[in-house]
Length: 315
Ligand SMILES: C[S@@+](CC[C@H](N)C(=O)[O-])C[C@H]1O[C@@H](n2cnc3c(N)ncnc32)[C@H](O)[C@@H]1O
Image 1 (cartoon, rainbow, N blue to C red):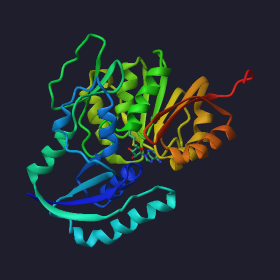
Image 2 (image 1 turned 45 degrees about the vertical axis):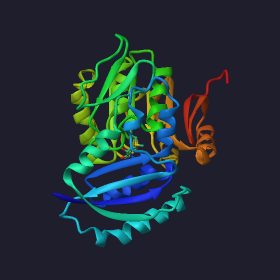
Image 3 (image 1 turned 180 degrees about the vertical axis):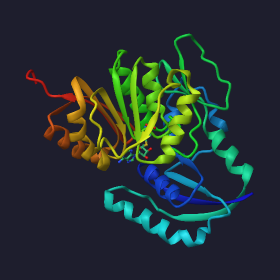
Image 4 (image 1 turned 90 degrees about the vertical axis):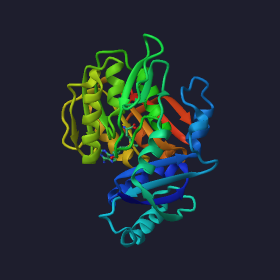
């Protein structure tokens, strides 16, 4: 079968939003090349991957989407171009936003993105591993997150996911309850289970993500019994949790903050990632207005992640 490959030239901060636009318009696979990821990989001496084997960009980012023959892509293009251009209304830089088309054979894209996705050590104890490799832990304390990302965001190697897993490792001690808002491929729930959380609820507004998360939970013995559910943020959720984690764009985090305030147990933590540096002030203002204090800020490239908790009488 032949596929139409639509590539949008962009920059790091718009990658996720553009991938969403392409998926919503019928793409059945997404491939992301991001110079920021490659820079990040280059900086990590403990990386397991063969860097020379990775196709990469020197600057900027490119999001490619693969459309099956059943989709007439030229008809979709004006809408895709318009929606990409509108991302600037949300304060996202989109780079050139130039859209190009190519015809590719089935095997080309299936193997291209898999080649780019290699075992990656996210923290000292957690390594994310594509489900089709037979990678084994190098020491007894290394736990594996096995993933087939399918169409959902989150191979586990994106800087915002990386920061989220680091926050989980810093905050969790074992035995907590946790809500994963915007679970995507389920990677953060799997990480949380490895770190000892025994009550996990995973939600995503996108049914494709919910299905991918369920499949990935089944791939990992540690999350084998856990379910994922469709839900918009925390609307309608009434059961409290010790930790709420969300790796979503800042604009979506803002309405989440008051919801999280109502659903956190005493001494609980709200962990926020997916915040581009320009939006950090907006998120911090909303946190302060809802009586959260920022305990720690983590940075990777232009991305910021915040470990927060409710204010106490001692603050
Ligand atoms: C950046 S991805 C993060 C995926 C994964 N948690 C990770 O860290 O790799 C953001 C996810 O949030 C989901 N999302 C976006 N808006 C949402 C909303 N209003 N409610 C729930 N999920 C949402 C998207 O569908 C996407 O799967």
